[in-house]
Image 1 (cartoon, rainbow, N blue to C red):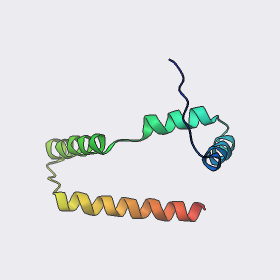
Image 2 (image 1 turned 120 degrees about the vertical axis):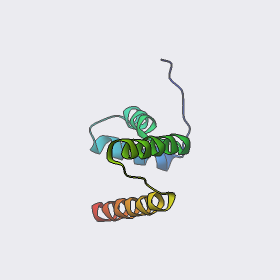
Image 3 (image 1 turned 30 degrees about the vertical axis):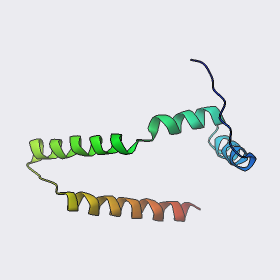
Image 4 (image 1 turned 45 degrees about the horizontal axis):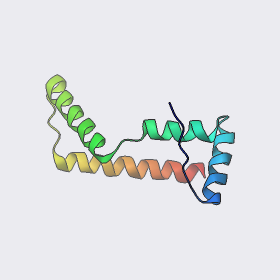
Length: 87
């Protein structure tokens, strides 16, 4: 695998260095982990559809768009609270 340069402002680089050091890793590994674990909007939609299909097939639970959106909001709110508490 060949390497590529990513240009970011010095403040971003410094922040990444602090985060990487606190996790005992490198900026390279931190960025790679982010890229591998972050879903695109399309990937997120596909995952949601597969989940809906699984719930319907195995549990007989039909999740509506409204229910899905409400759960997404709840998860985002919970994540935001968790991030705020960790700060």
